[in-house]
Image (cartoon, rainbow, N blue to C red; front, side):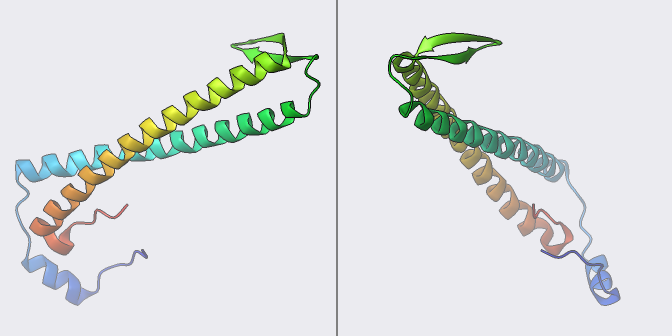
Length: 136
């Protein structure tokens, strides 16, 4: 959506329709703002988790080519341990599963936030019309 200045006619038309902002309206606007900020954080977290999962999938694919008897370094916390390939593959699989669960949890939260934001948009646009901009 492109932003632009209002024309004098639009400004005059809106000036006549000024409404008083009630406490409940301000609470809804504040709630929408907090939800929008939380949405931004969750979207970034979702991107990070997707990247982590992609990296783990890539490592898992590379390990399929490794010799079963060899040991590979596996990072746990700040340390690297040399572990057999099958054990590392198990650990990677569990890490991938954990990330997938976290992603689904984040997506559920995001869905709930977006639903509530939509309800607030409907309510606030019904009250203020073009006088308020809630487009994110």
